[in-house]
Length: 411
Image (cartoon, rainbow, N blue to C red; front, side, top):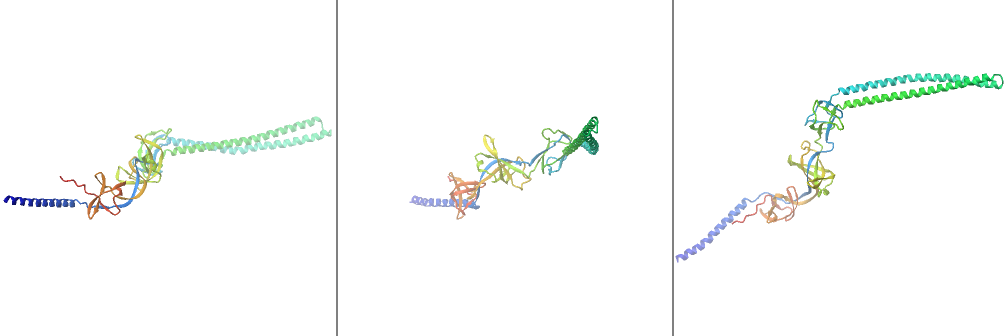
């Protein structure tokens, strides 16, 4: 009988104990779950998404924004007024060459001009006098020729009336012919005097003009000894020193390089698969390693027509003009990670960190009655830290940003 009572008691106490243990475990699980229940949620909402083309590139100076400044003449550097990192403005003097030889040449050209001007003045003064003398000779021989012609006419009339002799008539004819020949010679002399004076004056005038041109050329060469900055910018490099002698040959020797950091662009290497989507005017953004958390903006300015081969992959250079406002931040040759927006649309999206992978499916935890509820979703586009939700969520539903990890089955 005693054994029967003990058996009955054990049959009653075991289920009660097991029930108590189960209740304790459930309570503990519930408590732990409530303790780890995420609190931050975000509303599933529609937001603009952009389809982008990613490319790697580098910051470059635009055409005309990087200038190598040199000397057009040979000479010794007397003074160098700029150093690396200096900011210069257009027209500022940055270097000077010695000018002693150039000044000597300019003085010589000035003297040659004075000689040419003196000769022209002398010819201009002498020409009227010589021409006047030649004209007087013409006038004198013209008068003598008229008298001889009149005498020859009179002798012919007297010869017809038999008042004079044939010998006197012949003599009058010869005097007339001689006078006419002298008159013609005087006229030719006058013409030569006039022509010669004109040629001499023309030659003297040309000599003056040639001397003036030589003087201007010497002045230009003298001006080349003072080298000025063609653009405003920063001195990027210096290739000479004071006291050095530079020789100008087929190409001008480079003194220094100036870069305008306000006129930069990004040359992005776009794969041939994506180049058909890119066109001028599209918005673009990029980051550089120096400022990884900062986005820079710009627009596609041009697409280079020729391809570049990189690692056996055909790529095209896309020039992106950088928006203003970044002066001083960017430098040439900085590596740029470029994103070009080729399409844009509005989609239902949530933060990418709210997505979990469970059993090979994408899952989000939706807040239902204050608690997370697992729900499978189908994903679409990605834009930075956001993901498009094609199926599984509705606008306005709230999802946990940091959803709980999947429960691990207890053993």
